[in-house]
View (spheres, rainbow, N blue to C red):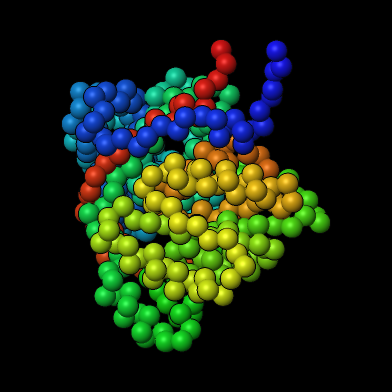
Length: 347
């Protein structure tokens, strides 16, 4: 009988990928530690409030962003926890220097904790850092992903159309939707890969309303090839966003590039596509990913990177944010994803 050793990508491809479940459908979560970020969207407290209604004791590990943004809901989270007798441990995340946050997290959270990671208002880079750190820790960390949708997302179709009309013939310049400017293109050591000087590069991009993010990454990396992953919203009323984002980023200027469309909510579509791109191109090209898509698409990037050391993650850190009113509003459907199946360890 022949024994075949699977490559990391083949191992990941062979796993039956768990389904994203609605929060209400899970009878017992078994969480002892909730990791969340103090963003300025209402859904910063969505998973926390839902979990607090259950008869399960847990501690909160709250990520406080630096530099401080007054609108962030850190004090509201702390106040809610105090009122409900929930212990709060604060962890600082400096967007100007995001290196090695995974180490900070692993030192703070008990080794035997069952962690629920609420990605609802986390930075995309932070999501990847957290998933990779927990997946690759020396101890068998039990962790689940939590995600709270918003009731409505900005910009509205009317606002997006008005901005495009104002800009005119050059849609990639002069537009401000969710942020303005790029502070830096972050390349943190824990998400880096080996560099091969003569190897061609393929940049995997998740186009968004912040077209200047794509411009910054493209200018920094100077890739040989592109693979664009466009997002398909779960609600048909939001399908206009895909076409508008394509127009904003002027994707028609890259006719020889690969262009794909996958769900913004079902992470499995993104993970399967990343594996397909990797299998098709990694022997000839270095794979670089800029995870600027949806939160659940970014979870897929984190799982993917946890398996593949030769993949590079780069991220455009926003310089300034528009007002909180320019972001999502309301607390929508909540979901859970048990990712332990991806990271089983031998005893």
